[in-house]
Image (cartoon, rainbow over all chains, first blue to last red; front, side, top):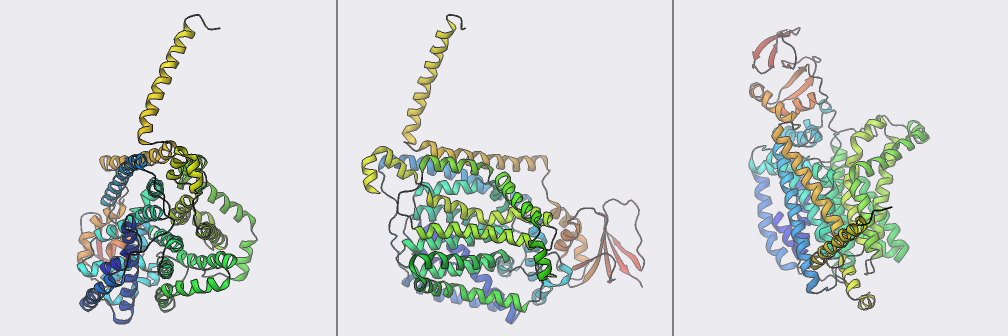
Length: 462
Length: 158
């Protein structure tokens, strides 16, 4: 499956950084789609065994040549400018520095995974626990959703646990290394996707710098090896927004939209926050596209988006409606209690303060100082970057933060405890997208280089 | 008031420093023309953050202070797990004060499912001892096997 979809995606975008872009997107797409098919088999036919593996591999063999012959390299318009050999030396130095830092990041991830092979407590208390139950209980897999395991957020979707179980089913054992591999695939794909997408949309140096901001974010370094679902969710959120931005530059817009729909669907199949993300994407695109180009254009876009989304949404709905479980945020809620919480202004103050303190003090202390200085030095880009892409990414982040704020407002759990135990994960989900949005707007080093070398030519160019 | 001579020496040092700065600037400009400030602004912090994190993990390994509770549980409960029927539900009693004690045990003992405490009673009871010197007794249960690593299995006799 991985090979087919890699082939299918591989020729989507230009050759240079496009290969990394295609590979990182296909890693997420393959893990996500295969977790859906595995779940469907599990639900309808029992625990997938040899017959599932045989069918999956036969499909792969049939689809590889089809994917190979139907895909062609796409041209991306309005890409980064030529800067000459002087800049290439600089770019080479930046490449080497970035490579060294990323190698340290990878080694740190491996070391952390070696000493904590089961991840962090949310991993073994929820995601890996579900994976083990699904695998070791076989046909009695529904036990993973029983009341005995009350702490496991039983209504959370299954992309991460099933991705692990699927590989275990091939290996026929529950080796902990698989959990590390899945966590690593999502962590490194997020970094690769950020670097390669900005390299394609903006410039190589911008892509590398954005990647360095991400790997240099303390919480991201730690959480990658924690084996929790927030990094995969962040990956799918970023993928969706990247695909909307690539759509504006790609020849095959419908393909990008179908893929964006699939990625948004997979976000909702990863965690409940992904369902919020899916709603936010649909609403924000409606606002952005309808206000600029009218409702008809939006309807066409939504139709393409839905083609990618629907199959995954069907799996999610099957899980939500057919596997009996309760949502800890909705259970016991009534209109009266929700209204009382909404009217309690101390909750607004507490949540607002926590958002600011956490975002500044914990997640991105250094970068919230450095990135504004960077923006001050380089300024806003004068290149043509699609306004709709910029609006989409920024408004989605704002709406998501608003959504998280609202969920904290109405939570029946102890508010302080709920914030303390979850806020860092919520911001982490958005952090790759925030970095992407920032570098979409800031001028590239190439722009500044050209401007300083030849101000007149630079002015003409833009 | 500066004494005569000290001002001249200060100027000389300042000139030297300026020369060194200009030389360093020229060297850096070879590799980071025009945009080096902005780029270094990101590269240097990223480098230090990753390196500091990298060494913090190394120091955890060297000092053996890393947080690995579930790994310890896995080692402790490995023997008893072999003796439990795979699809059983067993009672689990522990005197640990750690908040994640139940979760750790539940994860490690899968496919066996555990029920915290003595209600409802099941055929087998796992006692995980962290700080009691004496062997405890549980009403309705008799000792089945002491694994010697503070993990004891009881069997229901009533």
